[in-house]
Length: 113
Image (cartoon, rainbow, N blue to C red; front, side, top):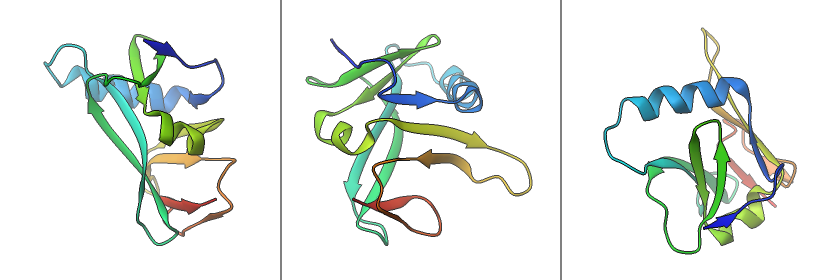
């Protein structure tokens, strides 16, 4: 299992709490949070967040009792990114603070480098 260096991707306390809550609703063993980047969105690249099993070649971050999986290609775009979770009347769910993004769309779910 390839380990990511500390600080590569960080989850805020709010994001950790939400991920743990969502993982607790699932029964499949070995699930972790999968972060990825795919082509699309109004700015060219879009963030993908899902739950899944570790795949060969994944970079793995152990974070407060769960694992985060990032494929090597996506890691190039996600280095030093912070994932937050906002709730409330104006909350948007998961929010990505990516220092690699040159441009970000208004919804914050797609970016370009």
